[in-house]
Image (cartoon, rainbow, N blue to C red; front, side, top):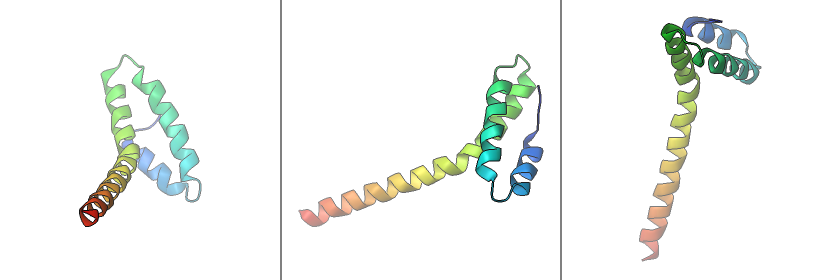
Length: 80
């Protein structure tokens, strides 16, 4: 059940230039299966891999939300 560790995931993403999204999608599917395991080490590796894959998306969403908030606030202040 233990497919890949974090290092192998990173190497796999780098090796799949042009089709990273498809590779990441399959890796996330594997992580979903691994999280259901009773072995804590497998669960921990799955969480590490999901964190690595999903963190950049969260960072981008945070940046977008911050930019929207700044534009809203500046528009509100300049409209007063």
